[in-house]
Image 1 (cartoon, rainbow, N blue to C red):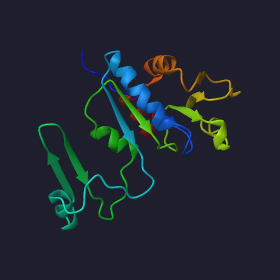
Image 2: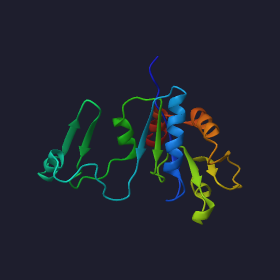
Image 3: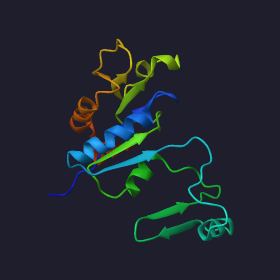
Length: 177
């Protein structure tokens, strides 16, 4: 049977705890035998490369793509060189097949999401304005009518992810179709 990649997002304001939750959720899912990848959206220029290294020099020279490979990992760096940022769906199409892709950020996109909320942030809740938020994980009780999880209840959040992550192909069809 072909592996079906399933997708779910974690959405929330900066400081809500998305990365902290991911750092606990990913190993939990892997411990249950799942293969998991992550797409992280950055809102600013970022760099994975070090100035002066060969790959950095190649990008500075104008290369559109630079692939770095070793016995431990490989990475493909793409310079947009003025082209538009790829959509979430274009990025998902480039991902190697795994059981789950968890998306951090891309909160305005149409994929299913769990809202991550921390009371001390004093930011508005997102779920009232986003029909794609299907649950809330928070450090306080939130009246939402949606499934509610404590931020520290990793087993329950993992079970929810397994039950509600959306088939990538169905997501593509729903959003683009």
